[in-house]
Image 1 (cartoon, helix red, strand yellow):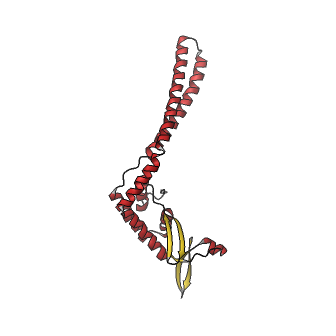
Image 2 (cartoon, rainbow, N blue to C red; image 1 turned 135 degrees about the vertical axis):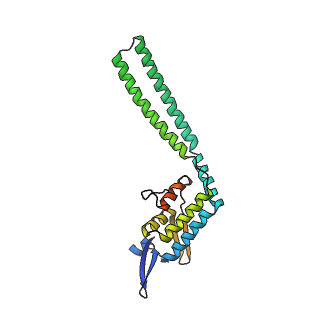
Image 3 (spheres, helix red, strand yellow; image 1 turned 60 degrees about the vertical axis):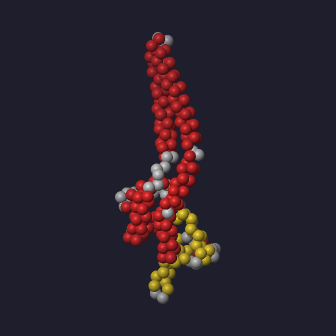
Length: 214
C-alpha cells in the first residue's frame, strides 16, 4: 500500500491504497482513510511497548533464537584458535631451526613472514566471531527504556516532520492487509531488544544518520 489522496466536497482526504489497484486496477482492496489507519497503528504500537509482559516474551523468544546460534559460533572460534595455535607452533619451529643453524636467515624470514600474515588473518576472524557472540547477549528489557520509547514515539508522531513519521511507521509496520474498510490486519516488526537505545537516540533526534534496525 502507499499513501494517496482525493477531494471530497473540496476537502483533501488522504488515504492508503493498494499499489496494484492504483496502477493496474488489479486489486479489490478498499481505500483506507489515512488518519484512521495511522491512529489505529499508532495506538497498537504504544500498547505493545507499554505491555511489559508482551515485551518480556519477545525478549525471551529473541534470546531463545539467538541461543541456537551460540554453539555454532563457539565451535567456529575453537577451530580458529586451533589453527592459530598450529600456525604459532610452526613459527616457533622455524625460529628453533634458525637458532640451530639448519635454516638460513633469508628462508626463515620468508617462512615467518607468511605465517605472521596468516596469524593476523586468524586473529581478525576470531575478533569478528567474538563480536558476533557478544551480540547474542541481549540486555534485559528495562521498564524505564520502554516508557522512554513510548514517550519519544508519541512526540515524533505528534510533532515530527512527515518524512520522519513515514520512516518510523515503515520500520515498525511490515504488512497491512485490508479486508474491507472496517477490517484491517497489521503485521508489526519491533526493534531488536539489543538496539532499543539506538532507537531512542533516533527518536529523540540525537542521531539523524542512525538507521534503526527492526
